[in-house]
Length: 623
Image 1 (cartoon, helix red, strand yellow):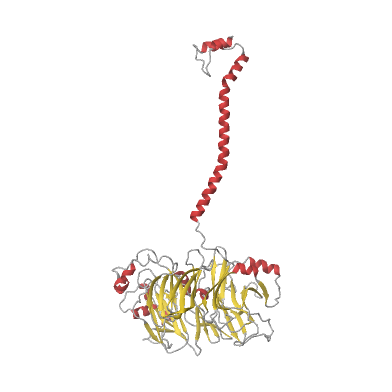
Image 2 (cartoon, one colour):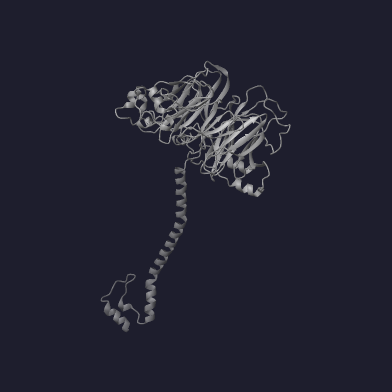
């Protein structure tokens, strides 16, 4: 009673009988009844809380299921929009026949990424025979063809009037207007380029490739093969040389050498605009007394920043780029940096009135001149400014007769001379030892024997040599850079001849038919195991050209081969292009032991080493 009375006194008046309210007159006297009433009155509230808790748990469960699902869908959509679709199916190895073979003469070959998939594609010259007679081409059609590196499919084909001698890629046009020098000097000097200066770059999205025949130099869009410009010249006899920008239009300019059909002594150097192809003045002719193989032309930048053009006919001459430009354009403007000359070189001038600097001549004609930098032998057709910058500095390897010499850049003196056998193909530079100076891979073929040697670039001493059964075959080897810094060397030959053993009577001399087709092998040599060769491939085809392409993310490289495949009848053979992944080929390669060394590596050791071998294009500095 006391408790009920106390509550009645604290709560005046009678409240409504709604749920949750009370009337003090109806309250029970006992504490038990009070507790029962509290339970009855609070029941709806406890039920609502339970329902809310169940809803929260359901929401949390749904969130745990839906959030990962939404995140996964967003990631899929993000990848679909941000990651470009792969163009074609990537094949580590493919083969494609392109027209008929032109004998053992190497076809025009270049590597460049023209479809934007970060893999260098294959560009080469093609000749096809047709039943229709073209008034200008007869029964043959000449083309430059771009093949996808990933699948071997044709990306584009550009028909030419003549056989393509050279293909070069890498010239870049930027997509903004040309900044002209003060007063519009470039327009005043070359008014014929005025209509093209503003819009040319916008029409040239992607890399620019040059297609060079005997009479015409054509620039095409590397992505589509569409012509950008062309220039008609007579008797073109060289690749285009990438020059610094001579006009101030921010595009590198070009130089080509022309030589009369009778290969007389009048050799001309012609300057061309890299933007429009217009001739920059008149050709500059040099009357060379010597006659022989065309050397160069090559651009060289001295240690003090002076530019010279190296060229010759069986000799090595040099002329200042400034002299060439001023003789071609007596009153044309020239950027100040090109007026620099090298004092040490200028002492080599033949006479005070001559513009030629004499670098080398002798009783034997010069066959090859190449910068002593790794990579020049396989991609010297590149028009990339960064790559050419490396090639234009450092010493040179000089081949004349049976001699190989190192010609020093600073004073044009020979540092060493290696004299043993005539060298039939251009040497290839790579790192066989760890002294940082490129070494030279050379080949000699005679009487059915191929002698292969590696000469130390620092001293001229022999670092490695071997002999193989193989008829005369002029094919440049390849140096492939590895992730460990040393180079692997790729070359074609038949079976190796064991050391201290004369050739067997199965040797086939040049020009002598064999009862069985000759099998040629593609070998890989790595300096870590100089007594071991990996036989990557075998074929009865005759390889006439080869080059190396790198796939940086995969630490892989591909070997591109152009071969002559004979036919069963009297028809000309087919030209066959192959792509071979080196890592895939190394994994399946057959091991060939040249000789037994003091420490014979086991099969497990060799397998582990070569399977871990990676390839990448290293950035070398010239020595």
